[in-house]
Amino acid sequence: MNIFNQIIRGILFFVLAIFGMAMAIVFMVSTAIAIGILYVVARVKGRPFGVKAYWADRRRASETNNVFKNKDVTDIEMREIP
Image 1 (cartoon, helix red, strand yellow):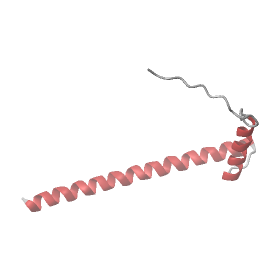
Image 2 (image 1 turned 120 degrees about the horizontal axis):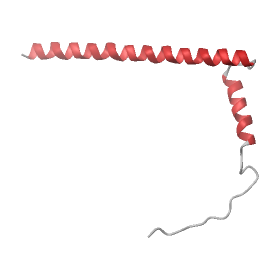
Image 3 (image 1 turned 60 degrees about the vertical axis):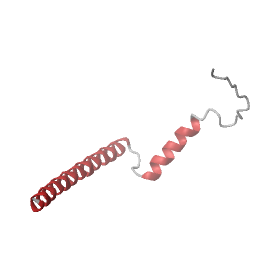
């Protein structure tokens, strides 16, 4: 009975390992497809595709939307919750 249980556990472990590898492959393929789409869109728009360009664009967007850039927040309202 002990050998039978070990065989069942081994088969279950093998099946779970194969399933995990299949999920990892699906994740890698979907990530590669997403990066390919981002690359094509960047090329069509004429922008460089890379981390530096992405962060530079994000930095420019955050500088224009910063509401509290030169303002100091000094007033705080507190309420007691009964």
